[in-house]
Length: 123
Image (cartoon, rainbow, N blue to C red):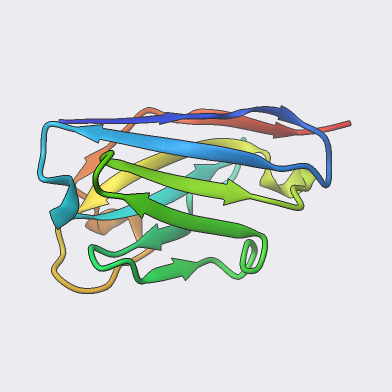
């Protein structure tokens, strides 16, 4: 089982980035996928998730700025991040949760985790 997050980098405030989470080794289509982030000195935050059927959920802090999507043909989930600000600086990771319905942004329910990718928002 492997989940690989990529696409992080340095971006100016107000800019955009798209993160990718590529999965392999399990039935990707049968899992909800979540994006999480952890900033230095802060607890992990569930940013967004997408269910098997495409239903989505967002943290209040990113609602209206981030968009999650999944491409089951490519075993990949994307996180489009717009209007970035310094508060979005963190290591972003993706994870998979084998639930039948919906998705959750609570990390304790996730079965598989990938390595993170660093997003730095700075001028």
